[in-house]
Amino acid sequence: MTSISTTSSPATPTTVASAASKRVADRIAARAGDPDITLRERVALRTSDAEVTYAELSERAQKTAAELSALGVGAGDIVGVRLPSGPGAVAAMLACWHVGAAFLPMDASAPDAHRDHLLSRSAARAVIDGDGPRSLTDAAPSATGSPKGDDAYVIYTSGSTGTPKGVLVGQDAFAEHTTAIADLLELRDTDTVLQFAGLGFDVAQEEIWPTLAVGGTVAFLDSKDRALGPAELARRVRELNVSVLQLPTSYWRLLCAQMRGTESPGLSFDGVRTVVIGGEAAGTKDVHAHRDGPLGHCTLVNGYGPTETVVTCTAFVLRAHEPLPPTAGLPIGGPVGERRLYVLGADRRPAAGDSPGELWVGGSPLAEGYLNDPQRTAERFHADPFGSASGARMYRTGDLVRRHRDGTLEFLGRLDNQVKVRGYRIELDEVERHLTDTRGVTAAAAVALDDGTGTGGRILAAALAVTAGGPTAEEIREDLRGRLPSHLVPGLIRVRDALPLTTSGKIDRKAVAAVLADEHTAGEEAGAGVRVRADADAASAGIAAADTADADLTLLLKLIRTLLRAPDFGPDDDFLAHGGDSLVALRVSGTLREHGLRLRPSDLLTAQDARAAAVRMERS
Image (cartoon, rainbow, N blue to C red; front, side, top):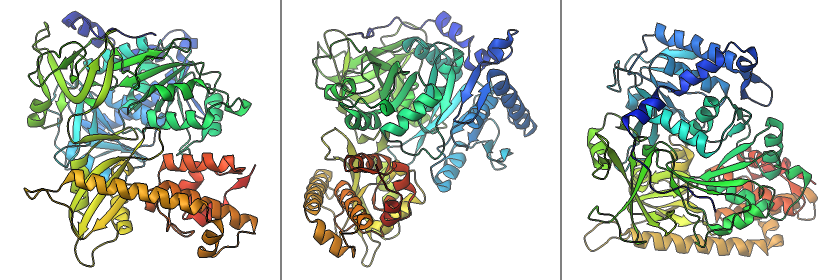
């Protein structure tokens, strides 16, 4: 078992200065301007139909930087990047660094209202979208309060007060992290790393910049690849020549389960040497599925890290030939780079032995804090009493961990009202605020439930009280989808006349969670009943099961009803409007494949209703 020491020497000013002197933008510029033409013309970015060299990337970034400068954008400003993941977004972000500005990357799939809110909240000076850079006239200059231009980016995460909070990451911290990740993954200039995460997710920055810093290639999926099944992902990986694959744990887990025991040439990942997972807890049973499939030859890296600790702050490295750890949960390992990990009790003293405690992260690669929010910053970032460097800080993660005898850490859970659902960090308070902002909703309680698959996945659920004649669950979900990113929209919504209360008059969250869990289980049982009532289903849906196309639609309906716990889901109902998402679509696709039917997950996501999706199915 390969692991990384959980102790680390304190970051010294010399260490930080050394990292800062090799900032990412400088390293890319050096590659682009290298006198050796073979180095300048190496491929920096690759899509299915185009390649961009380092020289071309630099030229594009400098052109956009000149346009930003003409708008008055400079050191200390924030620039929104409102572009889909791809070469254009990378050039735009690099341009921001050239003028001394920090960038705010936004998920292209999020509603416009949500992205407009982030631009306003961050006081962004400009935005780069499909029409190029444009000024935001209501923004004040130097919004970050950093006149030296020492900020790299701002990432917004869910907030406990009901509003998102912007995590501001400095150039020095990110440059140091870039070096540490390149070392951890042993990145070389011959590597191609797949850019898989949404641009508004901090993992995207870890996929892009360490790769470019070492002279490697970043590969991008097509915009239509909203969800890829095993065969589609394998084909894309081969076409793009990917060697390092970074995936959300929930997606990786589902892929491995669907590929387990298969040896089809169409599922070959022979060119991949390393798979990095993260976003939520993984178990050793997941690793068994990983090893019993076409990714089994790869080194597996289990990463952990809040955005405030600059993406991945700990990692556990497991090579293909090494034995699995004796724990049920896959360890999160030890520190990445010059970080210090403390397991502290409630008294903020080190926990004894292997006793559980809260994880605090120190060392130099930490975020500056929360953008324009000193109170929140003071609550989570504290002086480090264990560090020897001047001004040393540490971040309070709110995560419960245990340190094992070999020094590795095991994640045990959260200490507050924050949850992880399909890789996204979600404050339940924020979900509830958005729910109560919906017309007709008088009270709301959000919880995370086991998704019932036995894989450790979770779904976001909510119980609501509404006014007489108020909105239905479907109407509430549709309203939320129009103004929030999909991960903040509960997949299970139940409307009640009133919510259970504690003796003090507050909403009884435990009671709400128990009721929703019971209904979730009942929905699963109802779905199971649907599976054995094919003729009744066909009759109620108004279709003749004898006809092949109608039988295919019947099967599709049964699967969706089962997985969404929605026994009444009909052929003309919208999959997304009933809580469907990319992972559920992947599960539907995988099950259909077992029945000799092919339906791409993206076809289910983009179809207007189940009937339209069924038309796209093919028999294999």
